[in-house]
Image 1 (cartoon, rainbow, N blue to C red):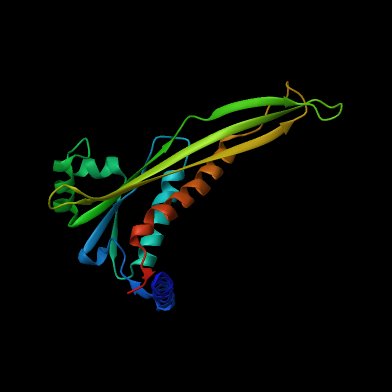
Image 2 (image 1 turned 90 degrees about the vertical axis):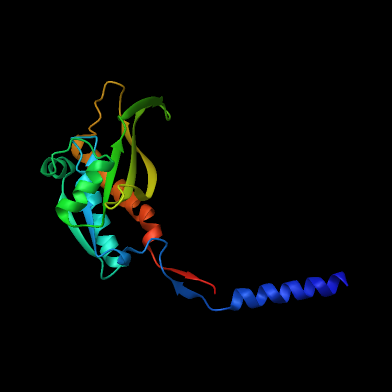
Length: 209
C-alpha cells in the first residue's frame, strides 16, 4: 500500500513538473494608472552621481517591462516640493503632487552611500614587504510608489550591496590612489545592480497554472 501511494505521488509530481508554464502578469501592474510620475532619486552623497544613474536605469526598465505605461519625469525632489510650496514629502505633499502634475501615482527612491571604510594589512611574500589597502563601499537603495489620491505608500522595497576594492602597495608609506572618480564608477555599477533587483515585482513571470 505504501509503495502504491508513493508511486501515485511521484507520478503526480512528474506531471506537475512537465506541465507548461504560462506568462503571469507582474505583481505590480502599472497599467491600472493612466500616468505614473517619477521624481529623480535622492542621494546622500553629493560627490556621487549614482542618483542620476539609478533614476535613468529605473525609468528604462519600467518602460521596457510594462509597455504602454506613461511615465512622466517630474524632476528633482526639492524642485517638485518647491512647486507645491512644501518642504517635506509627507502625506499632504503627496496629494498636492498629484493635483499639480496630474498623476495618480509616482515613484521616488533614496540612495544611501555609507562612509568609505579603509583598512590595510601588511603581507610579506618571500623578501619583499607589501601592504594590501582595502576600501569598503556600501550602498543601499529604497524605492516607494505613492498614491496621490490617498497619500499612502502603495509599494516599497529596498536592496543593499557592498564592494571591496583592493590595491597592493609596495610599502606602508605608499599612498593609494582610490580617487573619487573610481569610487563613483563602482557606485554606478552597484546602483545598476540594485535597480535590477528592486524591479522584480514589475516583471511578468512564468508560472504553472
